Length: 254
Image 1 (tube, rainbow, N blue to C red):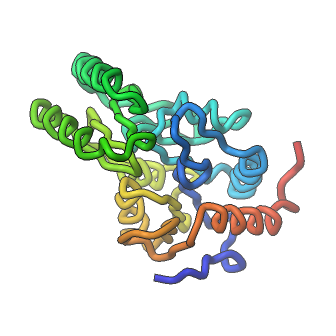
Image 2 (cartoon, helix red, strand yellow):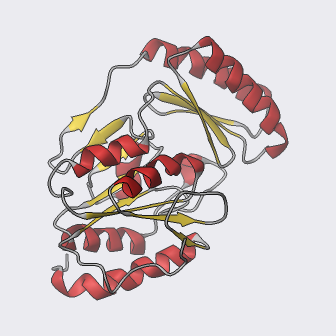
């Protein structure tokens, strides 16, 4: 693994970017609804999207609807809810069928649990349900125990762990599956894929790009299969700014 990120060797006509959102584009905050992508980073995404002829996608645990709000005014190719839902470069949206009734049932259970413990936040994201315990880290064990019990009752659901969050997904699709789908389509096909993420749910994405000799960039500490690592989100943003400055001459201003 190297901590020197590629820049000068990258060709915008031959590169495809896949970027996680929280912890990568936006700081992780106590309440998910309060997270935001800074305008400067949104502008960098616009430049990279234009310079690569559209070969930039955001791959996130958030829903497509949430991502569109955070990335406005951009409307990018995206994969939401850890790869369950996807909007391709032409704007077509793909969502597999899932047990919506079970999602609502689980959401009700997590709402009740959160109501009993101040500081816990339950969240429904179309085909998944999450419990955030960032404001009550001492309740991690209790929250994970509940999620494990629910997962045992719903065999079609997959339990995901993240930074101070546990999530039950109604599909076994991953971020790696979403990247695989994008790489079969224009404008991503036959390009060098670069995936950037910070959490354990991003490991599927790192594995996907590694299979096709791409570049995985892990932000922060922790065991990873990514080929590159950068210390902090701010370090990644600085690399992003430098790349945008290098490529901005080929992109018309708004």
